[in-house]
Amino acid sequence: MSDYNYWRFKLPLAVWITGLPGSGKSTISEAFRRKHPEFIILRIDELRRIVTPEPTYSEEEREYVYRALVFTARKLQDAGHDVIIDATGNMRRWRDLARKVLDNFREVYLRCNLELCAQREMKRRVRHAAPKDIYRKAQEGWPVPGVNVPYEEPESPELVIDTEKTEVSRAVEMLESLI
Image (tube, rainbow, N blue to C red):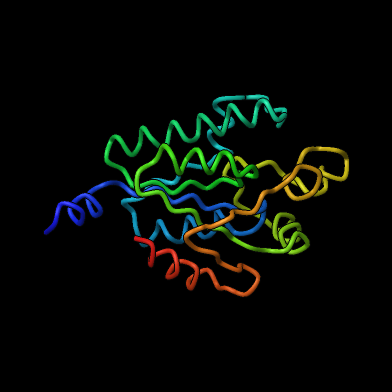
């Protein structure tokens, strides 16, 4: 086996699943992990609860939390773990930082229209520390990506999944093409 192939298969993988809240990040991450238990899911909402117990979702706080997310993913990789990052990552610069810092980085964009995302969020049962009723709160001025805070779509993700049309099982198969 060539040195390239040895290291390509030996280095831990980092997959950032990005998209609007309600696009299916947690659902697809969980389904993927059920088939691939060697992956650790790193959820921004769970990390935020530890880093900022009373989040304000300000730009400064988001910057801090996303940098902590990338740092944590790097440490998990250093320990030999494959990582799925389940995070909106509404600013491209955070995903670009991950691409720069993490080994074997893959960016996966879940494309879904805002209306369907809002409907899914209202029906969501398992929260994984995600804030509740975020789209309703956006109408009250709460900062929500895609509504009153920008969501910068990826420029060249390794994979785009249209979650309006793609079943979860098919999305998992598509993710498997990256590993």
